[in-house]
Amino acid sequence: MDIPESLTRGVNKKNVLYVGGISDEVTVDLLRAAFIPFGNINDVILPMDHKTQKLKGFGFIDFELPEDAADALDNMHESEIFGRVIKCSIAKPIKNLNKAVWNSDDYHNNEESEENKNTDDD
Image 1: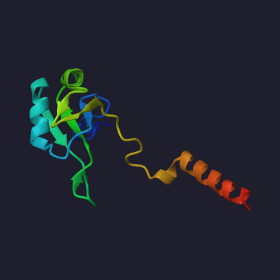
Image 2: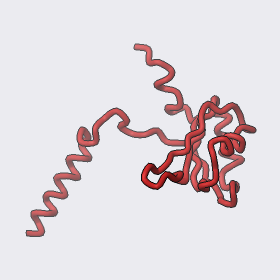
Image 3: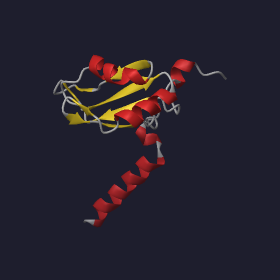
């Protein structure tokens, strides 16, 4: 079975950087400009808190090549953008992306331990 490349792009290829400690003034264009010297970038994502309409303080940069992501990591980790020190690391894939949390054994084990804790208090 062939899986489309669009579904696997960025998964375990180590070409997506996590960038933390981002100031509210930082934009997608500014972050792209800061990281473009290290290689071609597919996408820059700055998640926003929908309640406050402000940036969450972190972002993701998807490079075309893992080597470019590694170069950016080596050069940009603990550098400064808009007066704030940023932290960079290789992004980790989201676990159980297409799976409900209650389908895991951990969920049921935690639920049972909570029930036991409540009955012990009686």
